[in-house]
Length: 143
Image (cartoon, rainbow, N blue to C red; front, top):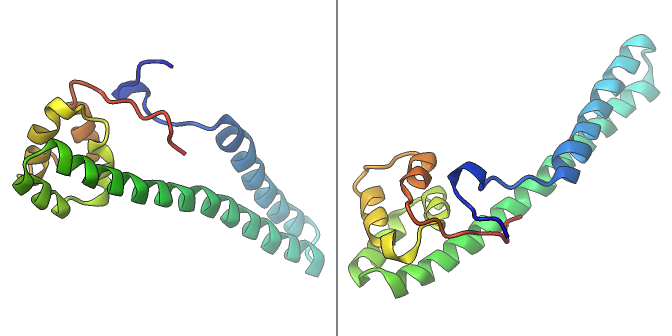
């Protein structure tokens, strides 16, 4: 597998991002166009169905990402207990889910310093946390 870093860590699913999602969006736009060209109950209904499919498509993606984030939070809490001091592991429960998810890329050797930095407010945005990581710990099992 390729070495992962800040520049290439974003996960793209070509089938979802470049086929399914655009098709659903175009389908909705097309249903609206058809409705304005030939207003009626049938064409109006297709707007509703197209919108439902578009919403379903986004829910499928966002729900799986939320489940993944919950699993990452659990994994990282267990990792904190093994890698950082007990006091810091206790304080790490104050991290937001997004901060914890961003910190998962940090190698064990730099985790304690990064968690301290995040807790003291040095890094506010998750991109800043990820940029601060020197030894990237790859995550190839992302949804």
